[in-house]
Length: 248
Ligand code: 13P
Image (tube, rainbow, N blue to C red; front, side, top):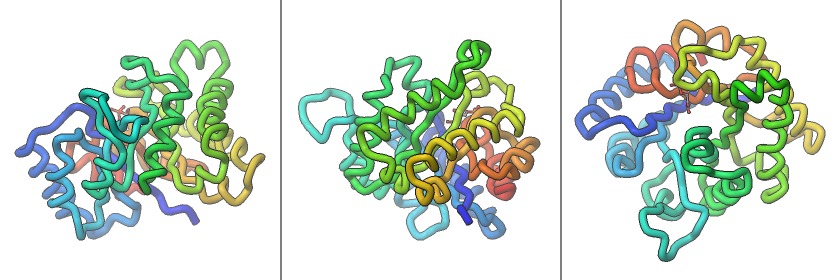
């Protein structure tokens, strides 16, 4: 059985005091949570979450990383720096980074490799835009995004990764993919991996992300191929995030 993983993607939100309130609220409510839980925070708050969460059931991570190991790359943060703060997870290929910062499939694959080389687990985001869904090319897009990682790192690398299916049209919009829509893409992803390696496919944790809230989490997380959630807005609210964690 795959253990569900619910991860909060705080995006560019928070402050030392807001984070403290959120973290202490989450820690107080973890007793009846069975799923794995993680928070992916802005770089400046890694020290705060490390000191607050070490020895607790909540893991932590970052939202981006450089593909480079070190050097003259002003403003960048490399994987070994994230490892210094005991990050378990690093999000790579989020649609906001693809769309706003022009990250290509190849760059995302390089970042995925850098995260694994440093001994952390990539949360590898894939997903189609509304135009792509309406054009009927959802599977082609997800397949192409995955192929870049598989070509660079091999299918076995997915045994040490999490895949997050995040339809771009559902992110931050309040429009969630229906459980059937999400399940169909999750099943497609698993079947694609199964065709290459059945063992990796069975163990692969595939999260859904895109307007997951307490009122839709139970149904989404009840689908056979949905193994958790990558949560944006609702991860900033103690009660909402805990409710989603409890649904897992
Ligand atoms: P929302 O939950 O705010 O739609 O964001 C989802 C997301 O992008 C998580 O990475």
